Image (cartoon, rainbow, N blue to C red; front, side, top):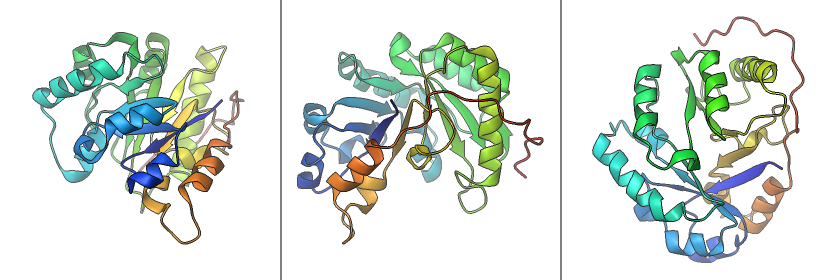
Length: 239
């Protein structure tokens, strides 16, 4: 079943408590804004985000010292078998730097590496296949400007069709793939195992919303179990 990880912080605390039993995403970059002991006490499972996307948006470069702190932060949380963490990554960097960061990861298969798609860079599809063969879970990141290339836009759909066509050629069973900021895709055609979003955190206080109803709506939706080969997409071009 597709797991929806609800991004935090979710405030006020009373709203967070109404989501007991849900799945949550907690970011190391924003850790001081989140009551982690409270979330750990009510969550069905946790996704630990390394904060690379938030740092990239803020124009902050992450050092190896930051990553060392992230590893220490993850360590006790990964004692729970339902918790997993995003391995360090660098948006819009080449595969050499991505592999270097993966090599720093000290917690084995409790982590998930990231395959990147950005506005000026796409990693080879062979890298995605290799990651899914070497790791139990792989994350996909889409870092295009939403004003020109939104998730679920034409460029995104072509890219996802190409990715899943390639994965289907190498896997008899659907590999475990997480889509960052992908909760809006739970009713789409791609078989993501899990997705995340800050929709509840950002919008639960609107007059027509409640945190419980929003989370229930998302958690009741599912991606398909399998991918059927799509017609060959046009050449990927994000210009």
